[in-house]
Length: 512
Picture 1 (cartoon, one colour):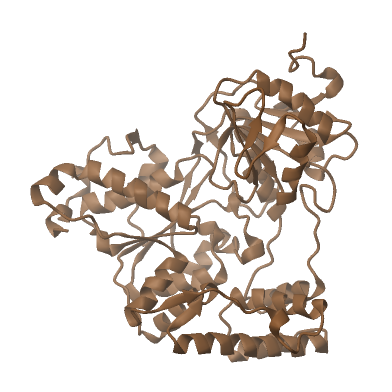
Picture 2: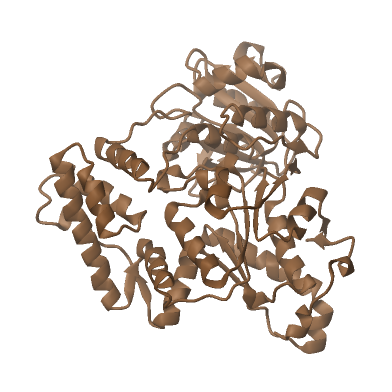
């Protein structure tokens, strides 16, 4: 693309009505986008227009002449989110630069919008054009030394740990020395040696596993064999960075002395089980030095009652960044409701009467802490479960889905129904204990500062569930078996929601 499109402009030549996807940016978004600091952390609340802010930053860099498309890198966490960002950017780009593109007959902008793993693969292919990823088919059960299901499980736990870390041989020895069990120590060393041997064998053939991509990119960035020329690196969902991704990002910035624009929300850090570390957000200065902090607090998703309840609930954890969601919508009727009956089956049967009264084409999201919670919907005879949706026989127009809370991240619906709010091992919050070996690995990684133990993740997960709703959240509970979160809501936030016991539920039932 011609560089004439991106010649330098002064800031005051940018239009005062700078818009993104035909929406004006609010004051907080504009401040974040215009900030010239090398390191920017943008903490964006649920429903506050995070993606709009990212697109605004990209377009601002291009319009102001601070960067051309090849000098911008945008990193996201999933293939779907990267694809959505890419599509939305190109749509906005062609509208913004339509006249210049037609005059200069320019080709599409070669901006880099990737996941961490797909970027790693691109960088490795700059060294070996034939580099490829193979499916990790290694099964501990195939190892002749694995003589029991228990040992197979232990080996799988160790391999999962190794997938999440790039470990020098000295660090492997340090970890092994800290095990309380000689059996664990020997097994860890054996599996580590086998694991490294497999990766070395694949590399000789210009291959690696999916989990090996970032590790190899780190290795060759450190050695200087891979170099990058990005001037601006924009990271979406920064709160979900793992130690491996953080090191990858650090080396990318170091390679090209780029600027960092990190966007995320520590309140929505829910992937600690896969290595994500919220402390990279909470302690941003420790990792990057001086930086500018921006809060984008206006939500366009839900009303003030849910905004107040959800933010007060999450801030019961005093380690989270303090902020207050400011709603830009009016409350729907009864935005937060609890239905409490003798069983969840009865709760669901009552709920179907309420569904009858909903506006046509309303969207409904059933959320469970675990995938198995989907089976709870079988208790209601009026629901027909398909592979990707739920049919309600008397109202086929309703768009109904079940997702786990983790799967719902980034999504929204008119009405959100949170299932299984009971105090149980597989309830919400969950009380599942890690196996002894995994617990030891977590402890050792914390002691060696390879990882940080993720605390209060169940609270953040419940916050994510609450904030998927545009109009209303309904909490299904069983009388006498309520979870600690439900009891806390009743005790501390009673003015913000109503509990309906089934005997008092006539106002939702439209019976003859």
